Image 1: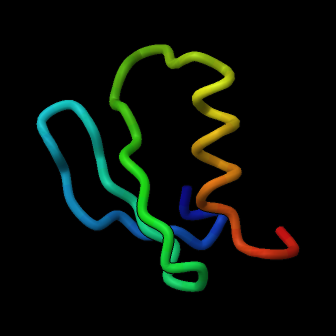
Image 2 (image 1 turned 45 degrees about the vertical axis):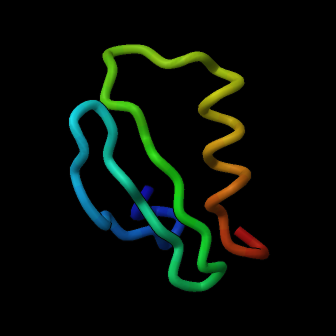
Length: 52
């Protein structure tokens, strides 16, 4: 997530919360061994900065 300019905001019980300071978008990221590919794409789409 840091590769996309996101920073870790806090740790939850089963998720970490990341935010992108450029876009002001926040998103929970599950801490599971495997996550669904569609979920991963959705998370990246929501947090990526313009032009990255």
